Length: 367
Ligand SMILES: *Cc1c(COP(=O)(O)O)cnc(C)c1O
Image (tube, rainbow, N blue to C red):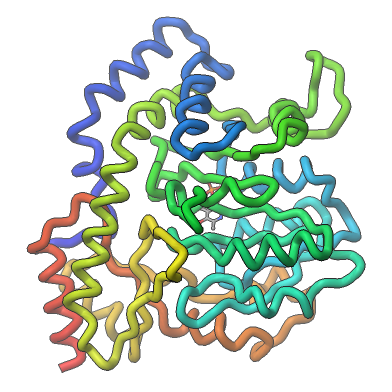
């Protein structure tokens, strides 16, 4: 038996004809630049996420950059975020000239620890970027309280949490701007790159629509320096079709996660992820903490089971951020997680037989 980390063939086969038909429409009109499918997808996303504005762009990384630009975050500003995330969260803060200020995460949910945010706030702090890691929203109630108290902006990095909820509100629609990624392995993945900003603020939305086309309005007149970051029409056509299945894919992931919770909970060498009581996760990953993590990784891979380490090195210890002068030991939870985490396959189309095979092999390793 083989268990991949993600089975794109299984995901695409039932909908490939519909995708082909939608892409054919793009070829028929040659409307490659912000064609009608982009608008249609943005409208559908507004409805799906119950949000006022959705602005498509070229990637999840660009969505973060656009959000930072829209909120006037520049050189000299500080932005608080987690060191236990994908690189882009902090990379984009650096890219606009601001300084990433890290705050450790909670050991059970892997998300930013709200209690540690306040002590990190200085007169230069402009914004907080919580990340909804592995599909589970961060504690947005507490984060928004802090932001209101100190007059800070909040950008939700929701690249991994499309459709997840906190307190019955959709992740990415609670802060000032939420960002999404349509990288192929995200829960809603394009056949290439894509991203999106979500906001309920009319002014920010208008600015984001301009920033994605070099800040121009009208054409060739520039109020701001933006990016060239449109959502590609062909990708929008793909996403438009795939969005119709997203709810059922998320439901399947939740059931698959449930199965792991039920069948892995008696192995003393592993710790299962904790889902906060106010949260509905969409399980972009099922990430466990494992003793002898590297041995387990090797064992599973030897048995043709896909698994991955997200992320093996916390961001405060990355070479490119040496200038921030963080050192080992500064964020012990993140550092510990980077040594213990392993994500196992939880994709929507995984079969129970495949999950049983994963479970048996984890047991076999510790026996
Ligand atoms: C995937 C991801 C991004 C970046 O998205 P791209 O579309 O690959 O640019 C940003 N933040 C997080 C947390 C991600 O997982």
